[in-house]
Image (cartoon, rainbow, N blue to C red; front, side, top):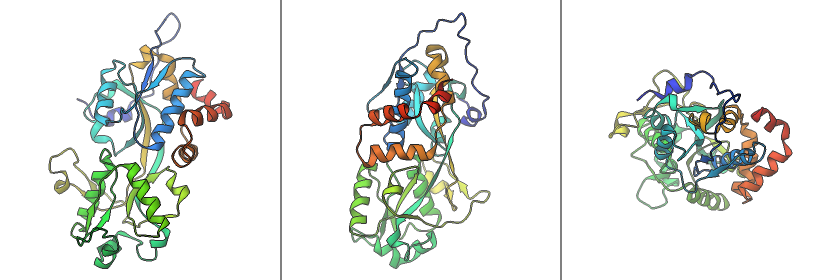
Amino acid sequence: MKHFGSWLAAPAVAFLSMSGVHAHETTVAISDLNWTGAKAIAHVIKAVIEGPLDSEAKIIPGLADFAIIAEGMDKGDGSVDVFTDSWLPNHQDIWEQFDPEAIAHNEPYLGTQGTFVPRYMADRVRSFDDLADPEIAALFDKDGNGKGEYWPGDANWGSTKLMQVKFESYGLSELWEPQIYSDATFKAQLKAAIAAEEPILFYYWTPEWIHSAYDLVSLEEPDRTEGCEDVKLDQENWLEESTFTCKFDDAKIYVAYSRSLEQRNPVAAKFLSQIKLDPDVINSWILKIGRDNEDPQDVAEAWIEANPDIVKEWIR
C-alpha cells in the first residue's frame, strides 16, 4: 500500500495518444454520494459524458460507501470509476489504503468547514469558549439529560469523528454530546429549529445551500498552529488518541477517478482530469436540487446548455 499523499503530488496524467489506438469506450460508473453537492457534480459529469462527449455514463444508485468506491477505483475493473466530491483531509484515511498510481484526479476547488449556530443565537454563542459555560450547554439540552446536543455530521462522514475529537480536546465532553443521524434528518431539524428560533449547534461546510437559505454564523476557534490537529481516526481508540484544538483547515476537494479509464474510456478520463469546479456554481446547483427539489439531471443539462464555453474548456 502507498500513501495517498503521493497521489496528491503525482504529476499531471499522461494520456494515450488516440492515434493508432482504438480503445473501447466503456460506460463510466459514477458514485452516488449522499450529500447534495456530490449529487449535483455526479449529474453534471454524467450529462457531459453523455452529451458533448457522446459516450456513456451511469450513476450507480446507493453507491455511497467510501471504502467500496475506493476499492473499486483501485481495482480498475469498471465497477466504479468516479468519486465525485473527495474532501481532503477528511477522506485521507480511506485513500491511504489504496495504490495512488491507480487513482487520478482533477484540479481541486476549496471548501470551508466549521461549527455553526443560527444568527439569532450569535449574541449568546460566539466561540467554542462559550460552549464551556454550563448555562449555554443547557440551552441546547433537548432530552433533559444535562448535556447540550450538537450534530457532528452523518455517520458516513470523516468530519463526524473530527467534530467529536474537537469537543473532547476542548474539554467539552462533560457538557455536550453528539447526536449522529443522516444529513436529510439534520436538514429537517434545522428547518424546524430556525422556524421556531430554537437553539441548534452543528457542523457544516461550504458550498451548501443552507448558507443561502438561512442566516448562519460560524463559531470562532483558535487559529491553526503546528500540531493543533493530530488525529488518528484509523485507530480503534481514535477518540482518546486524537487531538484537535484549532479551526478546520480549508479542504481541497477533488473529482477522483480510476486511472484505468485512460485505457477503457480515454475521452472521459481526459475530461475528468480537466474539469474545474467553482464553489459558487456548485452552490447554484445545490440550491436548485437541495432546496427547490428540481431534478438533478434537468439542472445539469440546463447548466451545460447555458455554459458551452466552460464545458468546452473541460473537454478540449
